[in-house]
Image (tube, rainbow, N blue to C red):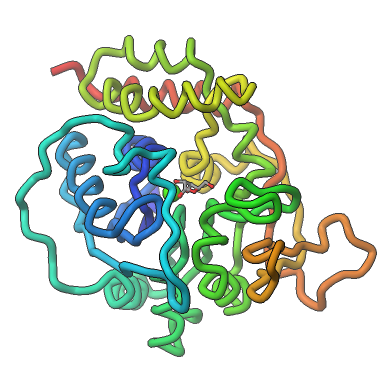
Length: 312
Ligand code: RIB
Ligand code: CA
């Protein structure tokens, strides 16, 4: 089987943690690196959480630390949702293994060259590292096969009524990603809110008995309560949706559209402006916007992958 070389750019983060647990069990994926960025919490904490997850998975993929703030703005975090340490209140020691000095954006460029145009970057966080790589390396877009992002929304927002968090935190970097010419597949709120897991389904995963299944459950549990209090049927697995879309696109539906990011608005800052539902179209249909999912199939895939972890 020809593996897909990927980098997961993330800000663990409770759903990022779930995404890493799932990605590590997908045989089609060749995880060349995990890159971290400030987003849900500060980059020191997102990086520490990436180390924690790597230890629990028992993986050896390299971790490269990235940007500590957006390209042109102050950092806005989501600690109120992900917990002060970004790990949903789960207590796990931080492994003391030393990380490479190489910065995330430099590692992205180097690995893209090594993969000779086959690299897929799954970006499930503010896109600051990608923006910096684009700014520093003019030929970077020629080296990336595609971006699969968790970010944006054709309709709605969760950071503001108009903007989804990953885009809102660094709208300039996000707009650079959409404009750079690399094909973009956007798993925005339109589909990720449909990729929810119910409390009962999360308990089923906990019952699989491995430490990894327990972490998947524990890290999401606190946020589950918040989702249920606001009338949802479960917690949206935002970042796992982008990972599963990468390997099981047949579970999803969407269509091509033009997307640009609002970087100047007051009420609309960070909005992914799309022509999906507009008569007036952008000149370029630069993005495949994912809008729907077979949720049952999605959850069964999550079960299948999490069952692969062995009980110690
Ligand atoms: O809007 C959801 C996104 O913001 C997810 O990537 C979550 O981890 C947060 O970063
Ligand atoms: Ca994230």
